[in-house]
Image: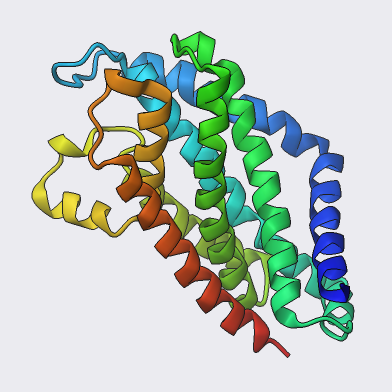
Length: 252
């Protein structure tokens, strides 16, 4: 019970911290809106082949994935903040395992990212995407799978960094390739073969594809079946949780 109580406490702390930061809540609405309206409008003449989906509709699931990615990776900064203020030291000496500490922070960061990603659905009507309640509910498990792995990556990077500046630099270095090579902004069927092979090892590719299958339905031809995308995300999550707990648990 002490382990579960510790996980719950750390989860609640991360959620409360997110809710109290008003600037992040505001950015949850502004940044996706800019991508969908300004970037989507500027690129609306981009050819998507023989499909009835507009470019803005096409990138809508991609922007959801982008929001999840950027928010999840940013959650790792909490480790550096806690270390700077001495709170991490208090957590590490608490009578719970370091695995529970990591799981509590991971689930808390994942919850924050899913909340922020859910805000993007508010703008679906602007780009002509009709998201039913069923589609939104089906999207939530996919969003959770995406954030579990990405939050783990962020926590791992933060555990290896010694300063906020170092984390910010490496976070950008990791985020941008994951985002641009996921097919969020352009169909992977039209890219060179070498770039397509790079996207195959990108976990966000499968997350964005799964979101497109659920949100756009039969209007869009996926790059893989939904079960394949989900399997890839589960494997990525398990691998990252294993690696992250090992690295996080060795912190002194």
